[in-house]
Length: 424
Ligand SMILES: NC(=O)c1ccc[n+]([C@@H]2O[C@H](COP(=O)([O-])OP(=O)(O)OC[C@H]3O[C@@H](n4cnc5c(N)ncnc54)[C@H](O)[C@@H]3O)[C@@H](O)[C@H]2O)c1
Image (cartoon, rainbow, N blue to C red):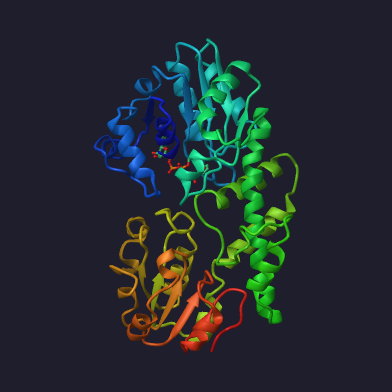
């Protein structure tokens, strides 16, 4: 959606093909199917300008295309490696359809060697000229449109001059401020994407371990973050501890890189630790919650603010909130949740396993404590009076360190966060 819409926004004629007929029908009727800031406006504008089209018919979609982007799912297979059945399935179908030169672009996050596999799958049936290019996507959900329109860099893996020229022209309008388009071979481009996500995941797990140590040693992770973030070599971003990374990318991409490494007889030791730390971190608040309630959650009710894996998205894939819900319910508790955008997706996934509130304050009614799982802006400066009057106890477990300890102490809450002192 983001790739197609943003390419249309720069004047290209784009046809998005999807096998989900329900999705295509909604999109054709000008109904957007994901939440992403700024996307709807662009989607409607380009639909109106007749530059953006939707179909379930692959042949119709690629008929007049110069460039075909594969932005298909690459979920983890049973062994953790990226499952290429969607990509190779479409590549196979393309081989039966193509009649003239096209550039086929792997936009999905795919393991090293996939461009070659896609090439083979197409070439099985199509004997004409075509190129397969690796063009990994680095956008962040929640700011996807902004990232796509103004990318820090564009990575293009190709050794074909013809494809290079087409890709260069396509991305020209997106890098007018001078951000680099980095050309490389296909394999390096494929690995660049996994290296980027794995590095960022490692940064998060590293800070989460520092936070755990802070709790044990009586240090404050906020101070450590500021202390190290001002070093240019480390950087200020991605140093916030919390209850782990989730989403559709980091968990599967780190796992897939570890798996690729294993297939190449390499044991990627750091990434094994990154995954283990993250697995445990999702439940980091649970022992404190149990301890507070004397190891008995039976009949307790929790208000949960945040379901999406991060703010400004309705994506709940691998969201830490879901792991917490399981742990709380396994302990005999009930949960009433609120999320500005993610509730429908959670309802579709777990139905009435939890209750859903119409707003953040309704979720608090008769709850024994508030748990915060996602750092949505509207949770950052809440009306504490409303919290106090609705919650049964003045107790907050904050997985995203939203509040200043001094302020929360003043308000008289019992407050537990990540890597900081417990306020009693
Ligand atoms: N979501 C992100 O932030 C992000 C960022 C960078 C890279 N990526 C990568 O992009 C790829 C897609 O991710 P996503 O989050 O957009 O996935 P998604 O699951 O939201 O969307 C994929 C779409 O492909 C459709 N599809 C499946 N099989 C198809 C087929 N045979 N023909 C046509 N359509 C088909 C699905 O119906 C679905 O609508 C993944 O490899 C992911 O790792 C995602």
